Every structure is written in structure tokens, then in C-alpha cells.
Image (tube, rainbow, N blue to C red):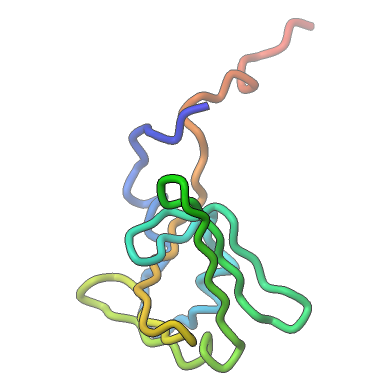
Length: 112
């Protein structure tokens, strides 16, 4: 499976308006980029804390943000990204649209 393929720009950018909330943007994205790292593993837990996990080389990275931190996040229109402050400092978060692999062998028509 390869994640290195060309995506149409309209599928990459989930944010279109600074009036949207980060929570709303997260509900409509397939992947996030945090501080330049792409993360497919992100979720809200039962207490609405946001958890983001990814690999940076061989090192596993994990971020956690509270509901108050998510609500306080601000959208930077010029950079098309969110600025969120967590316990570990400020982070730049980009919500990316429906991301799919460029290797979709399952999409071939079946013989009837």
C-alpha cells in the first residue's frame, strides 16, 4: 500500500471557512497533520479529549488535547491551519479531507 500519490486539492483541504470549529473540522477529515507530521490515528475519547498518534521515524509521538483546548483553538486563514495550545505548547494542526491510498486493487469490477 502506498500513501504517496497525487490527491486533488479539493480533497485535501477540509477547512473552507474560519467560522468552522476545530471539532467540526475533525469530524469531516480523514487525516490530520500536526507540526508537519501526518497522522491517520486520531480520535475523541469518551471525555471528548482529542488523541493524535503518529510515527516520526522510529519514534512514536502522541498528543492529547482537552475539550477546552479544542474549543480555544484558532484558525489561521493565511496558513489554512489551526493553532492549538496543549500541555506541551503550541501546535499547528491541519485537517485533511478524505484521504485514500493510491493502490486500490479492490476497486476492480467483479465478474458476474
